[in-house]
Figure 1 (cartoon, rainbow, N blue to C red):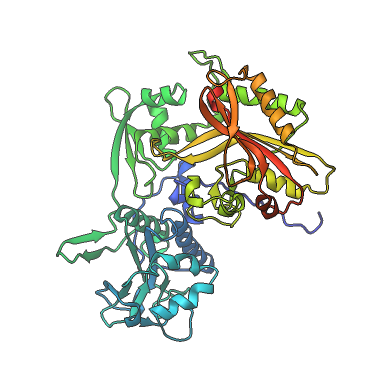
Figure 2 (tube, rainbow, N blue to C red):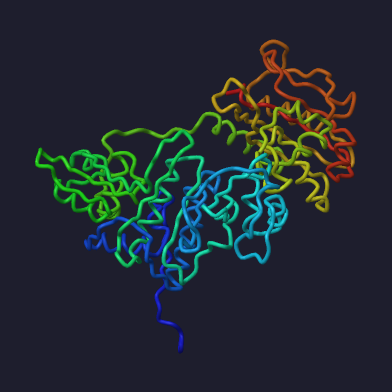
Length: 507
């Protein structure tokens, strides 16, 4: 280890709700407060002093907020500008893409908005935001009083007003479709970086005039007070601390607190950078964090319950063991698949499958949730064609089907699927497996209270080699020899027979 650095690096896991810890300044301030070194919080970004580290942290916080509370700029877009290069009042309006022309950040020439969209389609960073406004007839734009473009949110700022290490006065604008998120974002930026101003922790207000003449002043930097009892926190966290001790714990979490004098009531002041504190439960959680989860004494639950296996899972486990004993090998395939797998390759129409579609699939292999276990088993066969014949596979898993009667619009359905792949179709093997499964389920052959099969036509199976399976008068699935087109589309070369049944009716 000779010559190695003795610098200790810490990897800090910041929860998604703590926007105030997304930059070094917020972490340092939070630690100082936790170590009981209180600081007053307010904000202004006039006469600011940047170093390289401060500048990089300032830019990094904006990007983290964009990915976090701003939901990848779909709710809020942040723009920061050198106030000395522009002059107010500023106008936020919308224009056709062809009417907007300016020099974007870090570019050498001017572009129209339409040209910018084409230019940034290959940009690894900005192309992810183009869809937000790309198909709109009007694009948002911000001008100063001299017609200089500050930014075209949520895509790019103008190069004219870009900030640098020498910037002394920063104008921050947040455009949004969610006003609450915009207020939180603005509060977060100014509270974090106002400490670098000549007069630390001060803020200069900006007036916003709406089209209807309404006037608002931002940032609001609103403090609010919540009152809760020490007993509330003690019971829910599982500790036994005095109200004074709890108030001290909360103060260490940037929530200045004091006992009100009426019993064990605690007055908690919530500062503007703690927008994550919405309910008394959030305050209780902070008390638990400050106390230390490892310091909470373990206790025996007051009520006792005996765990029991879900009946459907118990049935599944029993069937899995016996199907394996019958000589079939279990497979575990992906729950997501391509549209082609459950439709075209099985000679079916995608509309008829009642499939649940993924809105933004990352790959063509994962476009829908499977409606049948058969494609997964056939792909497993294709991947193991070099194995000795016959190949006998099965899977008992859930498929997902659209169901308008359910609150989420879809339901899970537990199914059993098995395939037999050999030089001959082996219909009798699959038929024998059906008989064995029904024997295990204690279902006798018969048309009324038992099970039976009858000839059926299904596009996935070979004509005249398909049967529908009935149990107690209800259809539960199909078995038969697969159609040659299905076999070839899954890159197989031998005949294959299959069975696919619903096991939920047997619970």
